[in-house]
Image 1: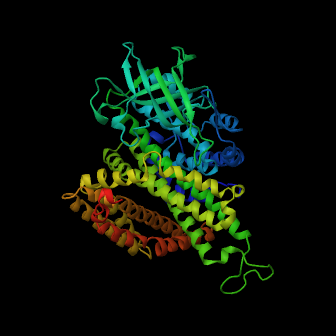
Image 2 (image 1 turned 60 degrees about the vertical axis):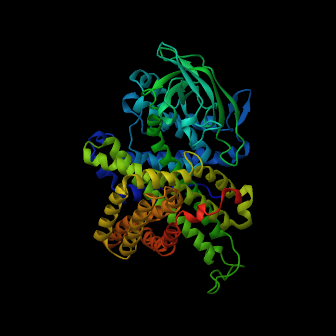
Image 3 (image 1 turned 30 degrees about the horizontal axis):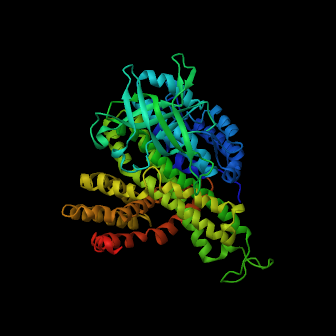
Length: 593
């Protein structure tokens, strides 16, 4: 198995050259004096050393050992506690948090690169800080000043962790039917009772306290999702002076035995009259939680990206070393018994699929992160408003398309290894098992597709999609070149399909769900093609100016050509599938299945 190395050259290319992060940060007063390219580069270098030197080496051993549950206590795999302590001491948990409460306040475009490195190095490990960052985000955005001051400094410092408690055994996607209840104690606190399942990092030994964000309902709350409230429930109660008090009535009933991410504790959590505190307003809990979810869903997409990058690194190293057969055009390595498998068309196909979608995914995650930064830091109402629309539109695409591509890339990597890809010692089968969950949690990819098609497209007559397509078309016309026309054609297909489904849905609501998955992929391939247009434009500029590593820039253009010629045409089939409508899905009677 290849030793993971953070793709710093490509990260810098995307962040510094394609999206010109320094100009973006300089234009946002809230970030001036906080971050510049020199600071960002130092952060990336240190993150690379940490994940490569300490976190990546724990990956396979953590998968083999997993987490252990004994009488409510969860022990993480060997080395995780020490690595997490080092990670926390380096300030990584508080990288993007509120500077007034001890965090670093860095932009998402920078932190998403660190997230990718961490997830590529060790998927299971990366989930622990990810949940803490997300919980901190919701607390900072919606909790009272008292709660923020009492909890966030220790969460940013990594001394305390966070978790997100939504799912119940009968209530996954449909949170409106949760049964967890909260009762007002009359002293500013609530008693929270219920059981939550699939809680990532609900219990572990990495930190001295865990701060749970729990969705619950009061007895008199409105029915459905309109009656959900959000509560902060600490594992150990916190005294007024900030010291830890007695244990709260929170316990871990068990941990799940899973297909992958075995070193991440996935817990059943019991709340038995646990003391909690309201975050935000009563019955507005989903709005508070979705502040976290927009960031988390991009984070899950980045998990798919990281898994794909790790798979590609493994596969290309193996393809260069493994010899089997001869090239169709004659021996490439006549001094050896056979040629490296890199000469074979199918191996090259898989590697180029991985390379082209991973590099496009890195640019796309950075693009979405840029929108999040504009929402958070911009002082211009029009800029902020447009960025909010783009975040809403692109979040389901980032989560679902990036994780679909991520699983495909781990499977392609496994196929490059052949039989060895099925054997544990090579590490590829673990990547496949780990990557699979990213398509499922934080809202399954089918649900993300339904959100994109229904709420984000049909509900506003394609207004947000039209905004993005106008941006893409403007760039394509301005840049020109060999990639402009096929991208414009893909935009036309996406626009026509948007209009088709929107019109059909007026008479048949089933058309939305019937088109949704294919529509999300049509959207994803078009978005990735846009990223390749931006990247090749910058690469061409550098080549013409004779600047930088010419081989790196030529590889960008050649890889883009592969994507446009071999992968973007998939949009043609997706459009034809969508045109067939809902009838093929609903023609078979339920009792005929």
